[in-house]
Length: 624
Image 1 (cartoon, rainbow, N blue to C red):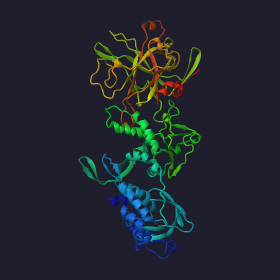
Image 2: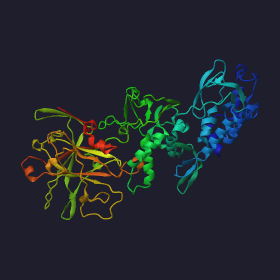
Image 3: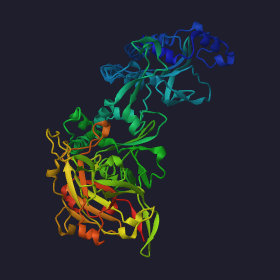
Image 4: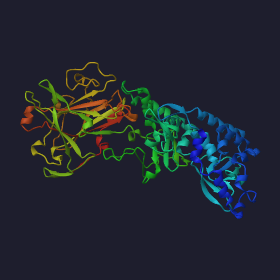
């Protein structure tokens, strides 16, 4: 059965078709074939018989018999075989690889595990199919052309050699194709994925890729037998080997691609894994949390190392990896400048050429992970998924504490005799005003903000960006261009939800209770309105970038690779704290206008505390 499927996919001519084609050739054409006499394909032996009858090909025959390809070469399909003379040691090596691959497990469409299919065995792909092509291909004087082998590799076929390997015999007619005898085996020209498997320095990254290999059912090519219990049953299921890393990072297995891979050596892999594993400490409710953390840490090692060479506009100037996001809020993410200059990403490294690109081996750790997974991040305050409106208890029922509007940011505006031009990554901001209910006075605006995709055991500096009233594209009220005094509370996700909650309508059992909000780490010199470390004040007539927390190290990760957890782990409550006399006198406003929150990770507390240039990371401009 295993050969029925294989032959049904690859067969292109039967014995009769081969006989008709070859029998119609002229005497001049037949002279190209060994023997120069009138030859009828039907009178000739099979390709397998030609191999069997040649004592020099004994070891090659042994490989064919062990891998099952003796039956393929004895079948009625039109093939060209370049049979190599190999040693017993070389044959043993191929057979050992074949047997090892037969014990490798691959995930099936239903999630079960089974051994890798014969057609995907590396011994077959890298050796056997590297010497076979579909259709009959003969050569003549001054002949030169490319030929596609069964494994997809292209080789140059000339009158006396294949890819530089000389013929010992050529143009031998078989009843099912054309036979050549090579003086030695053809070298397998690895693609980028193949090279990871073949380089002994790269066993760790190769093993990680192997984890994501799985089979998908090719419904169009499969033969349906019927429907049982509402499900299609197949008489012959055609399965295609796939890998989710290929679709997410780059098709390094495809011969028509062109990739550059800065692959981490095994030693570097071990060092970076030890560094990154603590960054993915998920809550206990995440299913298979240790395995998910392990996969995330390994993905963090490789996610910034692949480059599609067809997408590089000027690789000498800069290169963008396959995770590049064209984001104006985080300009420069996944971009590596002057990669070939001294100190650059690829400087001094020697590439290994592959059939679909190049591989460089990194032993030092050349990727700046602040440009990849450990990047500065941003949430827009106008995004309803990034915030939650606090509630008030009014007459025994919970009511929203504020009304919220999304405002468009004006491109240019003249205020107080000056012309301002705003250029933000997002052209909206959130405006919130306190809501007063009958019997319940409320003078404060408040909002919870949840930071997404944060890492555990790294240090974050968090910045709040506020807008002046005149940035509203729909116009503004002059009297609302005032400063705002506000307070910030921080709470953190717990490893396990609390079993009891408070009577506060804003309580969330998965976070610290409201009464246990943690003190903020406010930068030195932050006066904070002389009322405690958690108080701040906007200017009122300018865009303000205010550090509301410094060197904050969450114990829990909220990174959502592989769908592991999209639950936030860091929460900030921003609350206006304006006194009634200041509102009534027009000195301040309790209306808050927030553009977003930016959070920048650092590997050490010292780095976080020393950092004092948020505008180098927060890409926005306000020009006079």
